[in-house]
Length: 112
Image 1 (cartoon, rainbow, N blue to C red):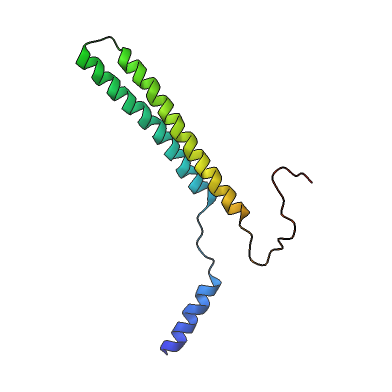
Image 2: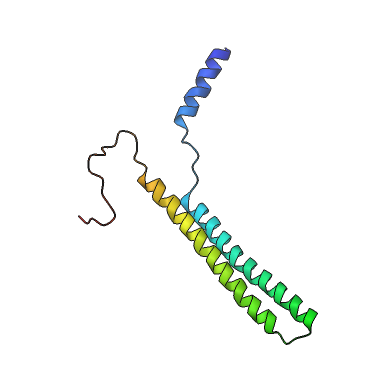
């Protein structure tokens, strides 16, 4: 009886599709990651600048300066994340499925 149950479970496992991660979920996660990186850069820059302005008793010169530096750092981090995502996508596309014919690789500069 246990052997029959095992066979039934194995047959059901073969029929069920494998769970896959939908592309739009991973894209949304990457988008949120990039937004958070930008906001974090701005927030850290604002905090440092505001703290220095309070400490020195100056006009909001340090706050403006460090917000701009935080914006630059956030954009740089976003670009690095986008490059990482693009490299991963290109690596996934360049993987050839098993049994595929590799006789003529196509470079990115060639056009059909």
